[in-house]
Length: 382
Image (tube, rainbow, N blue to C red; front, side, top):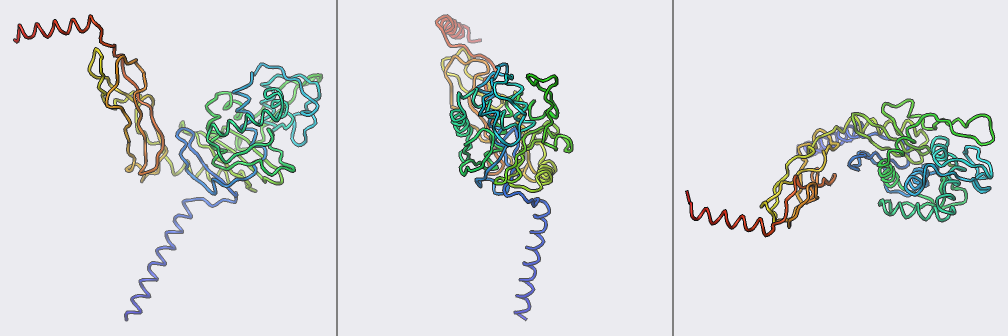
């Protein structure tokens, strides 16, 4: 009898475990990609991951960093003279010719829509003075962003004979998230079709974005495809719905379109926007030393909306980071402290908090008036 009860207990535990695994498997998508991630653009929260920190080659998704550096260091109106080296680069191109002159903005569209390796080299030479110097800038920028498991060797992503050109799904999402702070980046990567000048021809170059999700996925607005034999099929994609942009990365993914849509669908269906703070919401009052007022109201600098699962909302909590007091003068809009938004022990984001109004410093005239007022109160206690 004891053995029978023990058997039934083990069977119950096994069935419970199997049912739990089944539910989890159904809710968390299984994909073919070797590594993948979905990241929230606003907060940087990771909503889906598979081997997110595994170092892998990334093919032409490299060009996300090339575009970012070009936007920060270059000038859209610059006229670039194409070198023989740039014109002779193999793989996908926009058919540049040695000695051809073309504006930087057109090169950037050619870089991202047609994935022009020749455009990448021309951009690198113009901005960096040489491809090698430009690559140093790319690697420096990666470290600045926090993409510590990334190393660039080319501005295009061509990896023939190269072993140390790599990134991770997490780093690539981080770089893309950073790049989206530039409106021109968002404009270029969401463009479906474009014509750019073609020196010496009677017609313009026609560019068509290789990112099919721009046509077939609701809210799709970026960003870059990639393929080499070493890297396999790679895709960094983004989509915006109800004001929320999610960034998806799949590396070495034979069905990259399907994998990307599957994990984006998962993120949009499971994670809903949850407003934690209003812009200008009163957080607390801070004591002011040496001011014409004793305290200053501190408010949130911006609205804070985070992506959260339904059952996570009850676990949202705020940590306050403020000084006990500040010294006058205090300027309106001056940062006083910040609030850390967490779900359980997971940090989601920080929100800066600022002074609601100006508090001037005490001066002789103010102190004299205060003495007179106090003296009058003593004489007329009523």
